[in-house]
Image 1 (tube, one colour):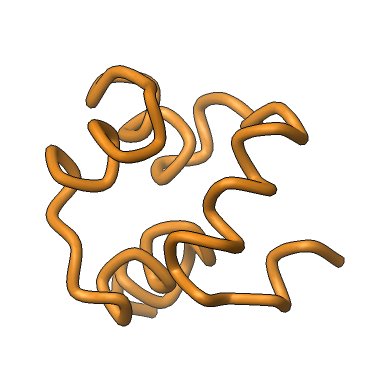
Image 2: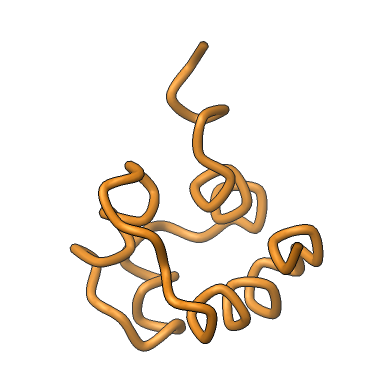
Length: 63
């Protein structure tokens, strides 16, 4: 399976047209944190997921 399909956070970010740098800046987190969420090394806190839902227009992330 391609890497893009494995992580929902990365898939949603790319679908919304954001680079990691742009998304991290808008989410108020470091690029390193976003990368860790997207590679499955860390689980994002609920407040970050809520911001992703809004930024990426991805309601399914909230479930």
